[in-house]
Length: 415
Image 1 (spheres, rainbow, N blue to C red):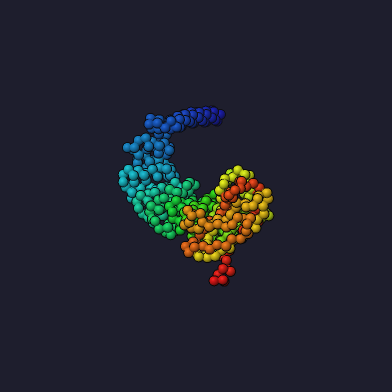
Image 2 (cartoon, one colour; image 1 turned 90 degrees about the horizontal axis):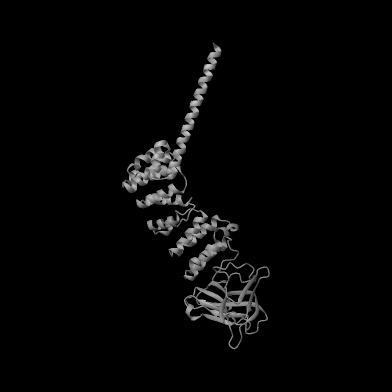
């Protein structure tokens, strides 16, 4: 009797197991078919997938796009099935705000998405929502949250911020101390010609980035060209503020340029930065400029194919108006006959068309005294080559060992 009961129980168990296997196989086929239909993503395949597996939140959410008349119903079904379906929460918000014009109902949906997902999209969605609703306090709060995390270009966020307000000081408070964002913001301000707002941004950048990481955060390829952009635009004060910040923070190895000591890197012991208030060799065919920082020399070589007139070396310098200055230099020549054709030229702010003032030939003197005019706060010092009259184009080389430019105190004493 016991044996027969055991046989009956075993048979029932086998039958139950077989039924489970058949059911599992059936549902595997159903799920596989639904997945295939969903992947087709057509007006007929997605409804078919949803009818096979109506408890899949993704199917309900996608079906909402294919059946606009049922959109709200299907999206609510999706978030009921999966409360962490961020995309459906956002879509519910957009459906309420943009399709039904019900911003009050949309806001909780957007906030719910941001509560679930701490990443970029929900934050940027809320910033855009509050921008459309013209709610500045909420907009700036979520714009800052977006900037703190965005992996993308921040320019669209900056653009909306400046549309909401043109108060540079106010907007700066909502720019996070995130190095990549600070660099992007400085460049964006330059696009807007908001030059005076740039130096505080660079100051914040150098405060959070160590000198060893300066190159990685745009010192050479972004901030350097920005310096030249400001100088060429004639915005000397912000350019000088930025330069002083870079030097003081040891992003650059120089003492900040001043009106009393305007020249930077006059001993050539630091590799040229090439921008701002440092030497910038000019790329001229037939003339090569080679610096040796270890020896503190600058070798200028001519191959005889150079232009008859060409700038060789340039440096922007701050100056005092109506002030006497003293420029001195040490040079050596190898195979270059006198006169060398090299002269120092100084273009003062506002006299670019006049050609400025210039020294004697480099080989004829080792110093040059000049006086700035009453309106000059800024100049460009250029080492210029011009073929001497009656001479052939230069060959050989000239080596500069030092250049010094100082306010000429003795001239004041004579007065």
